[in-house]
Amino acid sequence: MSANLLRRGLYKTVTASSAYSSSAEGTVDPLVQRLLHGLYAGRRASLAESITLVETSHPKKKFLARQLLTNILQNAQISEYLRGYRALSFRIGLSGPPGAGKSTFIEAFGKFLTGKGMKVAVLTVDPSSVRTGGSLLGDKTRMPELSRDMSAYIRPSPSRGHLGGVTRSTNEAIVLCEAAGYDIVIVETIGVGQSEFSVVDMVDLFTLVIPPGGGDELQGLKKGIMEMSDLVIVNKSDGDMISAAQRIQYEYISAFKYIPQKTKVWKPPVKRISSVTGDGIPELWDVMKDYQLKMQESGELIKRRRLQRCAWLWTYLKENLITTFVEFPDIKKNLKKVEKEVMNGILSPGDAADMLLQQYLEKIKPS
Image (tube, rainbow, N blue to C red; front, side, top):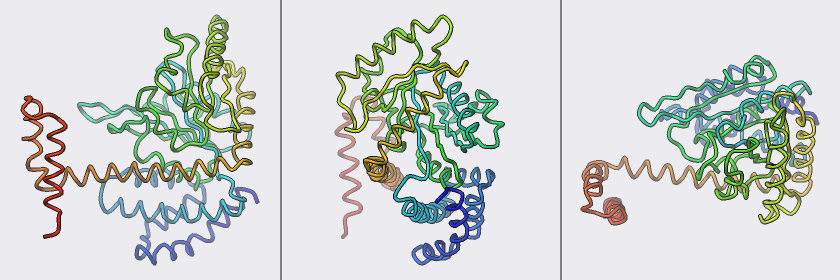
């Protein structure tokens, strides 16, 4: 059954699934109904509004976002069943050091995919200022051709201080893009770093993009990012940089010999491409399709997605527990004082944490 037929079928069953959800959470809000219909009809404005809704921190809007996601996830389960438990989209994560040409690659790769009749969604994350909390959100300016393509959707989001290279709501945004009928969802992280691995827990294929020569060629190996990678792309393999790109390609191929494989059905390849000339991009797509096919046929893809959902359960739980703890009245009242004592060396960080936690547990203990 084609994706278009599935979407039309889901469009007709939105009301029924909403009724099922309403039994658990009350009557579904008209806004949620409108967004559901818009998403399944493939309206870009509805997708943009839906992503804004799941990114909010407003309590009432968070409730509406939960209603929206509950309905979409229920429909996604039905769709996967009708497709023989095959994924609705192909999720690709991209990470790499600044200057690797990630945005240029996404534009060239995205145009290649839309030229083949596919719909492509790109979710990018811009670092937020530590001082002001603001973000430039300039990714669209780096992808001028793709941003004008009606078969593509680009959504930049601020990191808002979240570690892991992605925002807390990126996972939900992927689900929304799938509901809107996008075949390929590309997630670009802030960059390579010790904590930039959260994207691994939300994509099917995690790709490391590197430039041809950057001083310490095996920097990724030391940070452990190669252990997470399903594919390495050596970008900018054109002109005078071809020999340098070949050299780093061989070095990464050699390095992978000493890294345990993530799965028995796939050994991570290292491919050279040029985002400027387009050389190597068709062959790269063939490699990605081969990966998707092997992972689907072995059952690894569905298994990975299930484990990813569990991983994000714990991520959300940890964040919510910290928020609840910090906002607790007695803790909130003493927190500044304890922080000052830690800064002045009166209390060690560990002792201060234990003291605050003990205070919290005593306050919530039933009398």
